[in-house]
Image 1 (cartoon, rainbow, N blue to C red):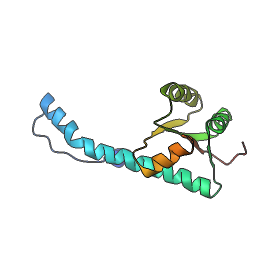
Image 2: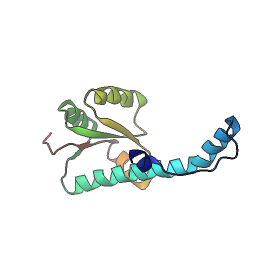
Image 3: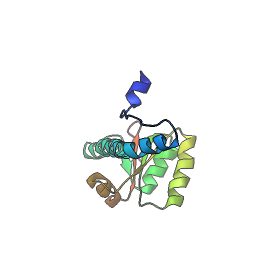
Image 4: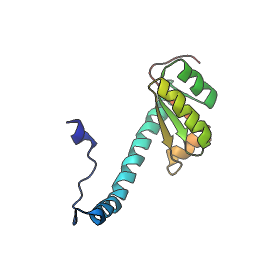
Length: 130
């Protein structure tokens, strides 16, 4: 049943060799991009709703790192425009707490708004004063 939830498209194959696999990847690119964009938009919606309603979210590099140190971060959101070194450092630290790190594209309106907020945000497991 979990597998059914993860299926995003069904594609027909003409060949079962390497060329068929290449064809499958090419045909699936658009579907996969749409799936990634939809996931990012859902995360951004949850984040911005949390900000508007004073929910369990925080933003800004220092507050996100502080919340991560307390172990209350469920998902870290990082703009793709943040330096790769910082992202890798956050990923290592997040792994210690079972926290997911999601890179947010600036291809969408939500992604641009997020970048303009500083590019660091977090969905928290519960509300905490930082």
